[in-house]
Length: 300
Ligand SMILES: C[S@@+](CC[C@H](N)C(=O)[O-])C[C@H]1O[C@@H](n2cnc3c(N)ncnc32)[C@H](O)[C@@H]1O
Image 1: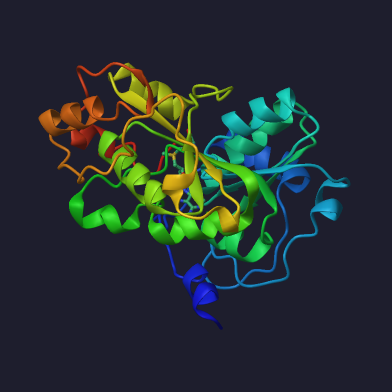
Image 2 (image 1 turned 135 degrees about the horizontal axis):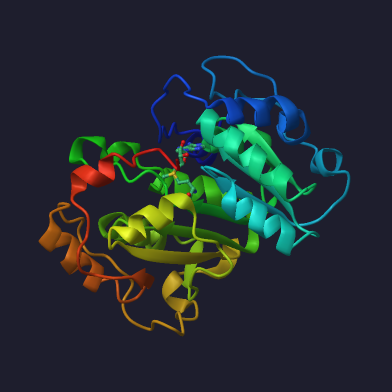
């Protein structure tokens, strides 16, 4: 294996495995509509593992061609369901490791009678690596990845240099990586990672058509601000990033601030310093780190 391939194989574990707690309704959605939306895969290892296997034949999966948009950590499937209705010509794949979230996503897709979305019960990182070929994605979405606010858990954060490289390898040139978070220090860390990666250029962009999910709504109600980041995949020969056109909406410096501790004052300072990112919500009255921790890993 060459160095680049080794790099793309670097493990990234952004979740902890838990036994599922499903409601009766979620169980029903899975039983009734699961077969329509959930992709059957070769499996081995733990329940969320996606072992190496031949990449998906997307024409076979969707019964047609078309752009592919992938969401990692789709939670209850609100963003996928809304996009599927708005863009029936686009194909979507959502990855989710949490079975109860996945069941809710199945319910959301069935409710809008979507036939252009498929779900994968499993790790989206391994899914990108093993199920999707190079340059196969028009967009990759990472909305409200688990914030892992405690310093000792930060290594579990999904958006890392290794993730950035893997996502870049799956995006076609001109494709977009869209991210949102309501943790200012995570937004800064994401921007630092992606600004430093020569495969991307930051583009202006707000939330677009993304609906407010239950998870996001809970944060907004607590006074959180939401940061949106959009990065475009550059052609491999684009040369040094400095030569690429600057982000016209925020000609300011790329964000390279150090990661502050998640105290209230630091969170507010970092929120103010995210001037280059699209933000919504309010800066005052942020939640305490503890209350956010309860939202860890749960779109519920
Ligand atoms: C905080 S929730 C946000 C859900 C949704 N994106 C939203 O905006 O409401 C993060 C979700 O990502 C899922 N997740 C974390 N790491 C993942 C991974 N590597 N692959 C797939 N899902 C993952 C968690 O189980 C959780 O449902």
